[in-house]
Length: 342
View (cartoon, helix red, strand yellow):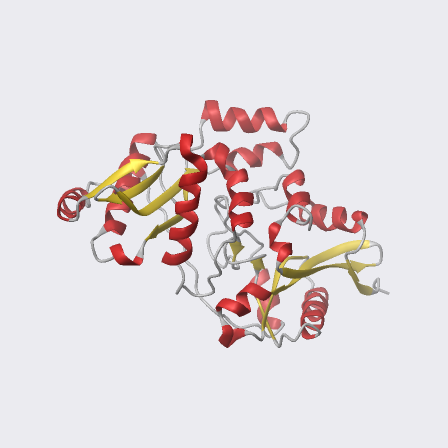
């Protein structure tokens, strides 16, 4: 007789640890999976440290067969999402979904999340979202033969079948694009030069000496520029500070820059070395040798791929070609840096 299936809400520190560690067993035979740093996952799930918990109600669940963990899920009631998308007040989210190839276990996890969200007044379950659209979003349905870049999803190919069999349908297509150094032949050079001269646009590197001031422009520009995008919810000050703390060690002025019109900031682009290439070497742990491997890859061996994590142009400066100028500058800088762009 098969072990009975049960869903257990995460309430104790031991539950949190089991929740965090389950993917390490699930993905042991998936060479392209990038193990997260355990210390980062603990902070991410800690209401005292992750500012998302200041406005979102989140309940995590473990699925067991007997004493063995076979799946995880988080139910997310995002009050800010309802505020910025009042027509979708009824939408709740699920994230951090991981499961063995077991439809009954997947259904039980989805049902637990849906029931909990139903008690919060939500009648639609949407995901995966970890925990907001400013973080890792979506289900990978193609490209399983490549390591995910930083802040990109990765999951087994059978996940799509688990969701579809549970009754989910596609809400939105999300695409990732890659440009290899060998594929760029200067197609934007002439156009970008003319647009910059016509629009009085100059590109300057982010000034790390004025980090907080630069960060405030990025926050305000990003929130305004993305306001009408599907599913967007603006960063709070504390959320951006939380993200910036994680990303600041990766910021290189050659890859993070601001577009100015007549000397005033009008847009920005931030790319970073794909830290997943270094994090993968650490295998989830900074000690005893994980930190040394991470530093070696980032500082000595160098990552061979870049990831553009944010880009935006203020609405009043659109139709000047600033987006094309930013992309052009990024491409030229990435070629000089020796990395393709993702």
